[in-house]
Image (cartoon, rainbow, N blue to C red; front, top):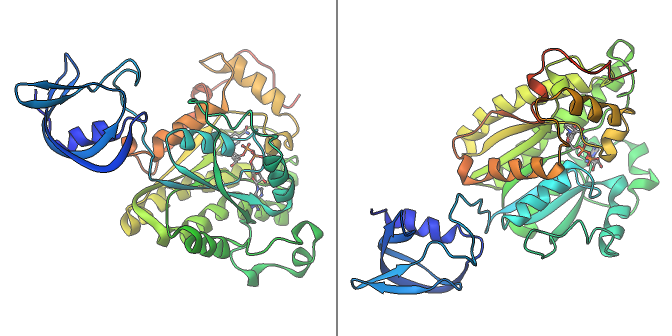
Length: 371
Ligand code: NAD
């Protein structure tokens, strides 16, 4: 069986255990499904790996599978890609898990951290508090190349009110509005390939919608939905074509989840609708894919502010088709897949990573989650 040179190169280059060297090796290579050989005439980066090179009928034959490198599969390869993840301030949330999954696939990681949480996050990072959870599957530690202070509620310095400017939680940080962060990333790195929005805030989240103020409702939309529009709008000009973006949503956008209040359900509905529109616009304008992951409940710092996250987790465990704990890593791995070239035809989608809870029309085994 033969394969195109390009496919052969992709198969070789995509294996995470191979490190490419600047040298170029031109070879005739043969592919066979049964013995996992590549077979074509190809020019590809010279590789350093413990795989044996063998000669067969005047061809250089490269083994596409070896015990050291694991079985042949569909690798998620993000080497050479740069990701900006907005909404990482500790190692408990989805943003952290996504950063780890992208790092494990080889991406360079930049994060945007909410200004009031910046000091503690950077201090903890420096002091090694996160070292255990920075561990990647190959044993190395995730490298966060740069942490940017960010407040995604403000697009440019002109939008920042005096009381925020003079707030001591913002003292010492600069250039943290969306526009300024993007300018800093452009100055530091030139471009990115992946944008992740993993942030939300609803100051009145514990209030039922019927008791939510206009101010609280609009604040939830501003921090949790428009922040994504703004980030993508500003990052798009420095995103490389073929790149991808994802956000995190929650099933309360579609079904009534009593207790997820303060306009947060509305904010998630807006985020999902915007995902479709932004997918169209960013696809046409910059060849960028836009998807959102509807994640199941996780006991993150933000979720604890809702007040009954443990009950939501238990409810999910009892009622979902898959009765198992939902791991943040499962969301991280899905994000890595969605931003990779393996998902090159997926855009404008809401992808459920929730043990199937979204399929349930009626809770069968559990009392109300707010009791
Ligand atoms: P998290 O606490 O790890 O992440 C939320 C982050 O948002 C925090 O780092 C916080 O500092 C940041 N943030 C808040 N306001 C900000 C602002 N104005 N500018 C910049 N950053 C700001 O919690 P998480 O639960 O992992 O949340 C990540 C995303 O996942 C959110 O969109 C959330 O709605 C979504 N989600 C969470 C769950 C859950 O059960 N935890 C379920 C579905 C979806």
